[in-house]
Image (cartoon, rainbow, N blue to C red; front, side, top):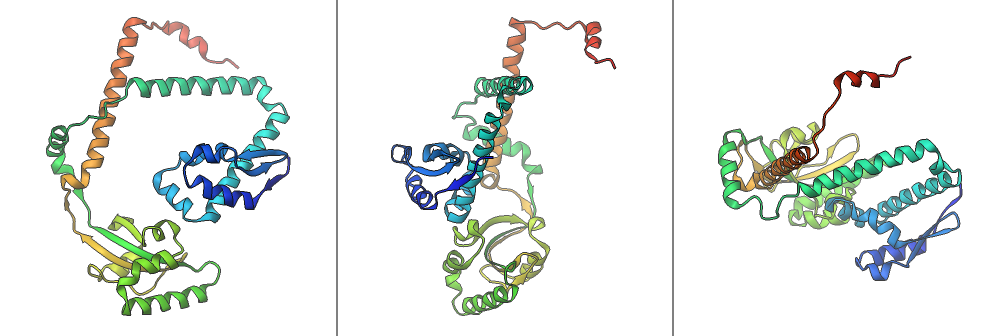
Length: 295
């Protein structure tokens, strides 16, 4: 395999440019090399565009992770170059397999297009009707809105414990600084970027150690350091929501998604039915048996 070379200064520069979301500026920026080939920012941006918003935010909050992400793309490109050099893309079985993948993509992407649901669907009235019809089944378990400061113990457990105790003592005096300290000190980059916020979690999805520690806490209270296999957690209870029927506001996004998926499925079925009317399919059931490969 050709040697992979990463140009770190250029990569750092490219991260700053890519962060502006300006394609015209970033297209010609060389951020790395795969063998002797220079890789431009425009080749990496499509991969970044496939990330979910939360994933993208976490990645941009941690340049080391971003560098690893870019490196993984470049390694795959290096493998691809090696495969091309070996003529792997010219092998009959490779050509056949790629043709099948291409056809499958054409089929699925076209079905998504013909089944597309208008942006205006569903209306507020349709969402309300769906909520009333499903209301008795829309039960939510007890949930917690939590924030955390996380300190990993994987490198140095004693140091992590000491720092957790120091932060805990500071928060007893200045609980209002939790979000600031989470951004500055927490080693969970995704929640740190949000001031420590973890969002709303069903009680069953909370780790047993943390669940036990917060069970006696009220809204706004902060736990003492909670140890688990990965490190130490300082948890603030932002809200406790008891078990009960979900309100429309709580399930509205899920209802809209379900209604849109249902309508898309109906549109898809209608398209296939119309297609079969135009081009009927008949199968010789007796001849189908000949498809079986005989030893």
